[in-house]
Amino acid sequence: MDTAIYYNGTILTMEEPLYAEAVLVEDGVIRQVGSREALFAQKRADTRLVDLQGAVLLPAFIDPHSHITALAQTLGLVNLSGCKNFGEITERLDAFIARTKPDKGQWVSAFGYDHNDLEEKCHPDRALLDRYPFPVVVTHASGHMGVVNRMGLQALGITASTPNPEGGVIGRCTGTQEPNGYLEETAFTGFTARIPQPPLEQQMRQMEQAQDIYLQNGITTAQDGFTKEAEWTLLHGLAGQKRLKLDVVAYPNLPDNRKIALEHPQYCKQYHNRLKIGGYKVFLDGSPQGRTAWMSQPYADASDGYRGYAVHTDEEVRSYMRQALQDHMQILAHCNGDAAAQQMIDAYAAEKTGEDIRPVMIHAQLVRPDQLARMGELGMIASFFVAHTYYWGDVHLKNFGEARATAISPVRAAIGNGVVYTFHQDTPVILPNMLETLWCAVNRISKGGYVMGEAQRVSPLEALKGVTLYAAYQYFEENEKGSIRPGKRADFVLLDRDPLQVDPMELRDLRVLATIRGGTVVYEGK
Image (cartoon, rainbow, N blue to C red; front, top):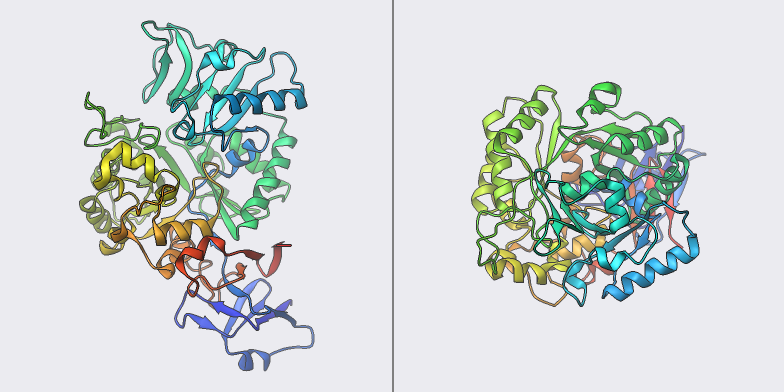
């Protein structure tokens, strides 16, 4: 039996009492929490004494929503994050092509530009990318849209006669039906799914790198929040080879990939080699910064009354809820706009049975107080992408006006309405930096320095619950994870300072010193 005592630091339990002097771990499970004297009295000759040296030990962070396989995929792409103009985009593409020398017909893929941050204030188009003698795709940071060049359009079979798919848009050259390379929502995700993937072993190596990024950020449970056949093949292969370093929870998308769950029942709602199928995922709208989120009222500057659009009909969404309940599976619904939020609420209310499947509204950016009240009554969870306050707060002010923009990610209102909340980063949209997310939830300051709704700020302790206790609850794992309590897993993160004691503006400056999974150090900072 492997035993260890953690001591000589600040131990933040996320339980009552909130702090402890020492923790006794046996074979990866927390056995006792209490005073140093009491636990040292039980020390055996072979007990490891882990001196925290004044650092802060707390339960490991839990990722309530991201796309770990998508992050892995981006590690093999041209990184366009931080590009300020079209010129920088082509410079990075040029450098990548010069270095990798792709074969004729081989796709060149890039990820991470944000048109809101470009000097041109618009998406690139086919003309910019037609300079390359390869099919090229560049993906927006949100993952909801992107651009392909002429060769890419030809390879994907997109022509002037190709209709817009339901829930998506194919950009057209002015005054014609000729595609200009821009693809939005289902037009982007559907067509680009045809792009050939790298060899499986290369994908596995990139997944190992992606896992390391989560571990470096103190996360021991991660999500794959839109699992299709290719992603499942990758995850299933890694699990079979025991190459998963953290717990991964997969959510096959409805309606296309329900068969993944049906064909692999041994993974449904239980881990095998650190992989489980947690439920289903469905998209109901798009991106607020990309102006595809579905709103009940028009965008602030939309003289034509534009409100974004739905991905599915009301009846389709009700059928997805019905299917999840019939399969006894949790459902996660991507909802950014309040119209999408209402569609999810109405569908679940209409189909709800006595079973608690803990449906999760993913992002919930513009959910209204009256909707949160109904969510509280129905037992729905709100998983907020609260870092929007910082990354796109200034854009939201322009798109929605001050009243709606400063009410995005309304965490305080969720608490007031009894709604369980969690926080995520939607990685690879942004990196899985939980400490930055805590800073965003507590301070709610945009890049431009604007306070994005002081009334919706939360305390550091309330913010921590969104990535520990409540995140474990979202996964039906509240008895195994999320706090330091006897009987739970010894999954810990070690920080250089106590997030409850520092100045709130310093929260994102905290450092992860180590990540511990089941009592074993899986990441140690330099």
